[in-house]
Amino acid sequence: MAEYKLLLPSMGEGVMEATVITWLYNEGDSVNEDDSVVEIATDKVDSDVPTPVSGKIVKILKQKDEVAKVGEAIAILEVAGEGESAPAEETKTETSAPDAETVQTLEQPLKTENTQQEFSGDLYLSPLVKSIAQQENISESELKTIKGSGMEGRITKEDILAHVSNRGSHPQAQAQPQKESQPAAPSTSASVSAPATTVTAGKGEEIIPMDRMRKIIAENMVKAKQTAPHVTSFIETDVTNVVKWRNKHKDIFEKREGEKLTFMPIFVKAVVKAIQDYPMINVSLSGDNIIKKKNINIGMATALPDGNLIVPVIKNADQLSLSGLAKAINDLAFRARNKKLRPEDTQGATYTISNVGSFGNLMGTPIIPQPQVAILAIGAIVKKPAVLETKDGDVIAIRNLMFMSHSYDHRVVDGSLGGMMLKHIHDYLQNWDLNTEI
Image: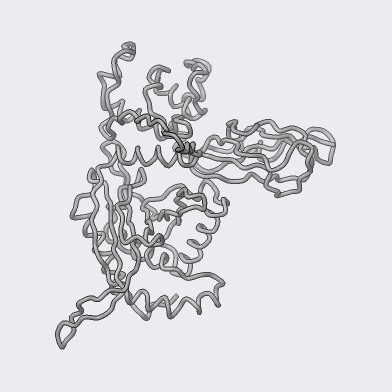
């Protein structure tokens, strides 16, 4: 018999570690190839780790709530064969070329690692964050001033790169790192958060600790509001043509494709067209630089059965037909609700849609997910009397109306751009062609 080391696999760009949520098997249990053996959580998504081989779990190396790094062994399996078996993934993890960004940032410190400062165990740093800190000569005391956005407040790659960018714009603070008692210069892109209010539970009141995902959501929402000055525009849209078109095609589509045809592919199609008309809404802000995105990746806010929220991403949505969008949306929604999303499924969004109408809400004021600069909320479709202009004069008719609200980051998106973007989405939906093919 041989030993096989089960490694924590790569989970997408920027994800360097994961926390063990629960083991699905115990030591001594036999598992088959492709069986999911452990549930893990990153600061992006929860997912399962399958075993690439059949065998018996002889040793669990990472227990519940412990953190493992990508490429690190989390369990040892006993498999058929002789001698110790090193999985192909281990070789791949150790020898695969890093992405271009990592090469540019980390090439020099990797070559001179043994000459750089060490950090105490008081502050948990991933290898990537530690390497960036060493390259930029960031002391441990300075690191402690960075508010981490990762799990349990850990510093992520984005946090330290943002700090480096802001640090460069404050040379005086950088030149005097020895004055540890002097408060760090505040970032120009975020305000100081107020201390949390402590509330004492009264008699008969229940205390419910936040679960891990709710903590992440809370941290991200506070960070988003502190970072971006939000402005929200509203519009009411007549989607009668959209409703008629979907009613005509939904049964045919389901029979042909085995997929449900919801309104979301139509909304995404309209958003994509509007982004193509106004590409400066498809950007991110880095310091004083605006990064114009090449791809149009649409985030889709999805409510989970436990009441939490996750945002899977439709990659390259501009390259998909209505049929392709319907399939991609259904797949992501199904896997989100069944905890089958991969970390890369929640990364890379450049614009987000939140369908608050699915909860019966007429409208909302959505919070912009960082580092995006805009988000659209879609309200419930409601039948109402509306004034129509005809060649014989104005008439009142029953129409399908829907509110949309567009929140945008006023640092880079002014009212004209944010408003025109929303008006274009409105125009595409209100003038939906009933002869559109799917």
